[in-house]
Image (cartoon, rainbow, N blue to C red):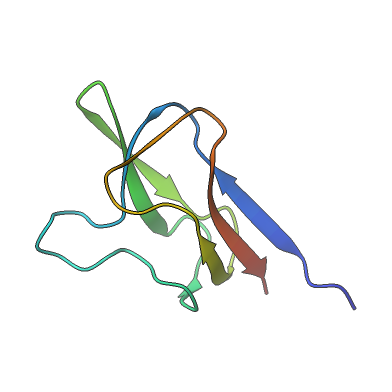
Length: 83
């Protein structure tokens, strides 16, 4: 049986942040179990922060960006193995 994976892509260009503040831990790490609508990171666009949320229940298998990385519309951010 094939494993279903879901890609989480940037909804728009901006700066990606893995944690809510520089002195706080990342929202998620590889191997973490996540629930649908759980916050995975933040995207800053024109000084406005947008929460990036999980589209499904599953396990984080890839995180493709470091904190403070610039990204473009549709850039791949996370891969989640659906459970």
